[in-house]
Image 1 (cartoon, rainbow, N blue to C red):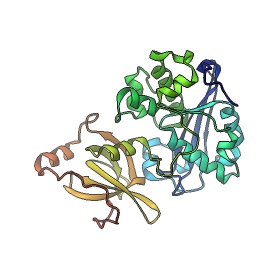
Image 2 (cartoon, rainbow, N blue to C red):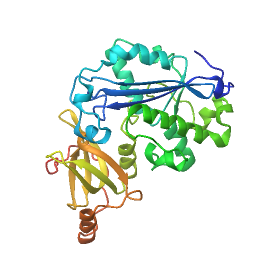
Image 3 (cartoon, rainbow, N blue to C red):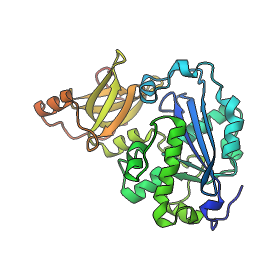
Image 4 (tube, rainbow, N blue to C red):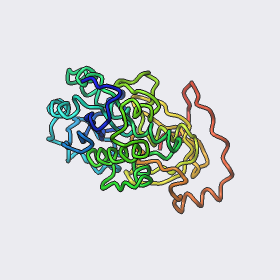
Length: 315
């Protein structure tokens, strides 16, 4: 459904969407395990949708630790294709909104393709808004993860890392970001300007980052972050790392990083990363602090290499 660029947002339906997934990459076969959608009309929420999805594949340990969604919870739930008509019903004729929305759209597009549906065609190439893009223009890059950005704007998330609560929080963040420039009275073209320009449903370039926001920003800034990680015994560990780059190995993503605890370059399976936190936002655990004070200053991070690295085995 086409909209005039001069129409105020209050006259345009907005569908805020969030998904939880089995892992970090739709390209490597990860799938959706939960979908949350909130539809706004006239500046008010008029419908909500929340559904666990059976991905019929393994859920990465890091995802289970972060979201609390277990294989037992999704076993026997509807498949994505079974729920697609209801999802499209809430999203059709609306602008699509999300937080780091390109990540969510990459999974939705891939799942639609598996279901025999052209995602962009089904939504008539709707306009897209991304609260990360708007926040970066307002506050700069870094530290714009939803659970950090929301409190900065006076929004208190009820639950973190679940699809519907995150969709609700994203919609509230969107409202707060646009309040100073006109809120729901802002025209569509001015709202597009607030995020730096139009954004299509499909990625404009195959090189466009489709990683989770915290991982994308950690790689971009190459500064120390606190990583919560599942070890080989499925136990959570915390350590300070300096991310270098991502590689694909044997069908999975691995993060190459300088580990300050070991004072050495290490590889970490992305599927085992629970979360990454900027050092300005979290204090290191006692063991990491001790290692930092005892070890010599690490060398500056190397630039990403275009050939395979042969580091120690992944932890």
